Image (cartoon, rainbow, N blue to C red; front, side):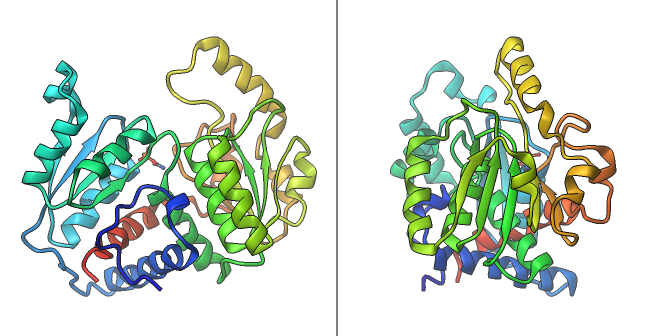
Length: 312
Ligand code: CP
């Protein structure tokens, strides 16, 4: 079992095996205990990391900054619009310069090929804080939350309602890795990325996971241990596309009636931010079944664990 991430970047679950993902989940839980008991864990005192965010963030950026502070790391926040990237300086040049100044790069960007290119040109760790294809720091926080609330990562069913973006892809890979059943409720015609789908199917064959895409909301909710809500559309889509997606997802609002069709002890998860009354009702968000703020807090513990895995 790999007990650290040295010599490896943290870009997507598709690049990681079950032992590595489980190790990071358990390390997140143990670092949460240290945080609760105020036990110091400044493993990286003296290090300076760069945080390059090409998109807005509430959770990921602040979770990273707090995690870094606890680990003794100073963070330099970089905005592409204040750098020569906007003038067309190639990424491979920017990456090699940042590599000379910093001990690690945490990056939120658009295409997944951007983090892969940074990984190719940088010797220091590169951690993906979200791309079009993957949200792996969210994935570790989600697994940590599932383990906290359900006590296990196997023998579970997730009903996932949302479009086929980065969080869905990360959930597909982890469900297939751990043998969870996953029903993704999406309007007909929406198709998953073929590379992610193939990797999901490969892992599901090994683990026995049942992964399906469906328009049958009731069937997806039946026996679900976890109901996971997510965005229906993404920034940058046209008004017409957004309107069409909102209409197509309308039958799949997660409300109290929907939750009543899952297991009585089902939890509600959402990576946030959530659109109330479009994706999920306020009643469900504020209900006892909702674990969204524990899940949000866990972003900080799990990002800390991912960084700490470079020290172990
Ligand atoms: N879930 C998540 O990534 O939230 P932010 O966009 O606020 O970072």
